Image (cartoon, rainbow, N blue to C red; front, side, top):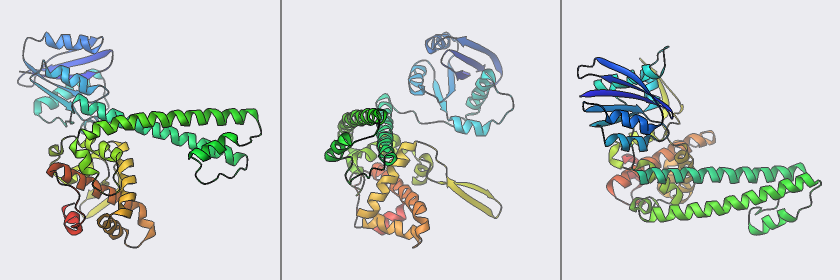
Length: 343
C-alpha cells in the first residue's frame, strides 16, 4: 500500500508518494481544481492511504477521498506547526511531511463531522456574525447621539425607543442620513436574525441533545445548539477535561522541573462557543444554586477574580454538558456536590 501526502490549494496541489517501506517513490504537482486532483488519485495502480491538512472545504474533500482511498487522515494544522519547525517550507516539502506522518501513524487528526453537522455549525457561525453586525449598528447610533449631546432614554432598542430615534432632530443632513441608514441596517439584521434563529430552532427540535442542555438554568436554545453541533459525538472525547481543551477554556502551561506557570486560556477551538458559554455562565450563576456555589467558590470573595470565576464557570458548564450528552441525563439541581466532583 502507498502512503500519500497532499498539500492542497484551490488551483494547485502537491502529491508525495511513499512506498510500503517508507521510501519516497515520487513527488508531483497537479495544476487545476480538486476534481483534477481526485482524477489523478483514481488513476493510481496501487491501493493507498492519504493524508491532508484541514482547511476550508476539508469535509467535502474527505468524503470524496474516502470513496477512493483505503484510509483518509485529516491533520490538525496547529499541531502540525508544532511538530515541524523547519526553515525550509514549500508545497512539496509539506506533502512529504504529511506522507511521513501517515506512514508512521503519527498524524494529529481532527474530527470530521457529517455534512448536516457542518451546515449546522456554519449557520451557528453566521448567526454570530449577524449579532456582531447589529451590535456595531447599535454602537454607531449611540456614538451619533453622544456626538450631538443627546441623552439616550431607557429601552432605546424597543419599538418605542427606535421610533424616538427616528424622530430625533440632528444638526446636519449627513448625520440624518447616517442615522437612517444605520437604523435600516439594524432592522434588516433583526429580521435576518429571526429567520436564522427560527431555522436553528427547527434543527434543535430534531436533536434531543439540545432539549437536554436547555434543562440547565440560563442555557438557551442558541447556546445549546452551538455546543451540541461542535461536540457532535460525545464519545470522541476520552474524558471531560478534553472538552475544555477542545473549546480553548483551559490555561496555557509552561512547566519545567518544579516551576509550573499557568497563563491565559488557550483560546483554541470555536470562539463562538466560548462567547455563548460565557453569557450562559452569567445567567446560570444567577439562576442555579449549584452554579452559583461553584462561581463563588472560585471567586474567593475577591471582586478582582470575577473574570477568572466566570471563565472557570463556563468551563464547568461545558464539562457538565458533555457528561449530560454522553449519558443522556438532564440537569439535576438537587445534587450540587456530585455535579462539582464529576466536573
